[in-house]
Image (tube, rainbow, N blue to C red; front, side):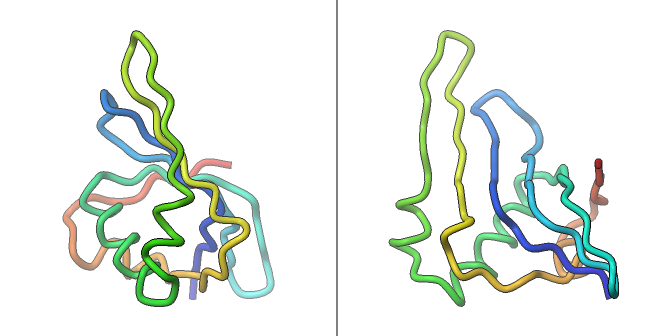
Length: 102
């Protein structure tokens, strides 16, 4: 089973996708990589994370940077105790696929 341990989430007010950085686990293989997901998948992801992590603590990790081009958001989750999420769970409730990049 493929799972992904989220370490950081990045997106902007003008983007159409979200970048999730972390560790992809496939059996005995672990790889630092990033995933591109849509905002529907981000909602699924944050709901799953907030079930095991205090929501206030989770959203306290959200950083915001306002620029002329738009607002940029990032969440560094390395200090949080987050359980790896099965990749299939992110696709269950949406119609879009994941883009994995190394």
